[in-house]
Structures are given as C-alpha cells and as structure tokens.
Image 1 (cartoon, rainbow, N blue to C red):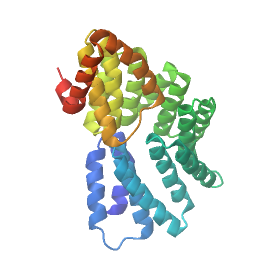
Image 2: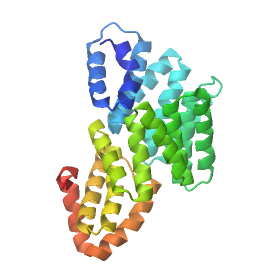
Image 3: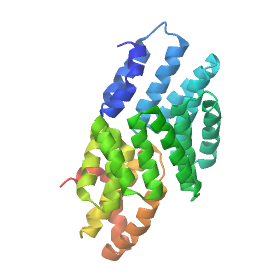
Amino acid sequence: MGLRTAGALVRFWSARGLMAEGRGWLTDAMSAEGDVSPQVRAKAGFAAGYAALGLGDFADARVQFERCLALASDLGDRQLHGAALAQLAWITMAEGRVDEARALADTSLRLARPADDKVTASGALNVLGEVAWRGGDGEATALFAESLALRRELGDDRLVANSLLLLGRSEQSEDRFEEALDLARALGDTWSTSVALVNLGRTRRDAGLLDEALELARDRGDKRLESEALQARAAVEVEQGDAARAARMRGAAESLLNEVGAELSPTELELDADLLPKLEEALGKDAVEREWAAGRESGAADLER
C-alpha cells in the first residue's frame, strides 16, 4: 500500500475500529517508501499522529504531529501547519499543560480562520473549550457551540457527533449525548459510539452501556477511553454493593491512565470525589488502598467475571 493511500485511509480506520491495523499499514508504508515528496510525508505524519492518538499512544502521536509540523513549516503549508498545531494543542491539554495548550490552539485558530478552514478552526475551538472547561470558565459552552456550528456547516456527521459530546458534557445534557450516539451508530463510528456510551453510562450509572463502551475501547486498543469507562464502571459497582471490586476497577483505570500519560478530566475528578468516600465507608481506608493497588498491579484483565 502506497504512503499516499495509507495516509488517506486513517479516518476510515478510526471510524471502523481498525486503528491498530491501519497504524501498522501506515508504519510499513512510511518505512518502505523511498522517493516521496515532502508534502506526502507531511500528510502521512499527520495521519500517523492521528492513528497513534486513536490508540492512546500520546508520546508517539506527539512525535508524529511535531514531524508533520516541521515539514509543513518548511513547505509553507499554513493549512497543515494549523491542523498539526490543533492536534498538538489537544495532546498538551490532555497532559494537563493548559497554558501551553491554549497558546497552541490560539495560533491554530489564527491560521485557520483567514483560510476558512472550518475543520481546523472547529478543532482548535474545542481545545480552547476544553481548557476553559477544565478551568471552570463559563465560556466553555460557547466555544463548544461555535465548534458545533462550524461542523454542522461542513455537514460532517462524525465531527458533529464529537462536538455534541463535548457540548453535552459542558451542558450536562443527555439529549446531546443521545444525538451523538444516534449519529455515531448510523455512521458505524466505533470511537464516537464508545465515547457517547461512556458519557451516557456515567450519567445514568448504567452498567450495560459502560460494558459496551469497554468492549469497543478494548477492541480498538484505546487505553484512554478504557480507563474512563472503568472508572465509571467502578462507580456503578460500588452502588451495587461490591466495593472491593470497585476499588480494583479504579486501580486498573489509574494504571491505564498513567500508561498513556494523561490526566483526569474535570468529570472524572468529580466522579472520584463522589466515589472515594463511598469506598472508604464500605471498606475502610486501608482496604481501599490494598484493593486499589491490586487493581493497579493486575490490570483490567483480572476483573472479568
């Protein structure tokens, strides 16, 4: 498979839950190709970063997007430059460096608006919304809504679903999550489907929805989303009376989060603030620490019934 073709297929692989396979194809193509134009290599680097990000490999995603950024800068490709900046902004935000993320997203947006690049602009707006949301800034909802409006103009239902999920979280709106889930299922988009399921399952404390999200995340190799779903599943488990298993689940979720180098989102921090006192009340602090450590050590595989 040629490098140009492999780079163009990355979004298909992401939507269909084939990112690990696609990443392998892309890696092989990047290694095998000889005389390839810098433009093709830059776009392939972006695709490789997107593939790594879809699997929760933040470190490699950063390397690939930075490689893309350097090539785009040399080429004078402002569109690709802005797109790579938006992705790096998201990774930086997820790693907890919000000031740096804001600066990257601002630069990306400044490049995208004059070019009427709605895809990049909407992505940068979402990062700025995330930064505002994590800081408790009420502007987050307006930023997410602006991104959603741009994506509706584009008519790209996959991007629309993603913005609906972010806006739904900011507004605490199940209707937004439901609309995103309907779009994602219609598209056959396993990533957006799993994110919608996590948000609905967490809101409703619905084990079935969370288990479906976990299965999709594991099939895709998405450790970041698996961590989020496991934490929400732990909250359900403690309410169902198995606090020890809940603590092990929470430890396994922490292990996955540490593995990808991400930080808890405000929603996850809020859930922990509710979950931890319940665990300690049910088990006692020492027992919670033991079970948590056991889950962190053994991982999610040992939690299957």
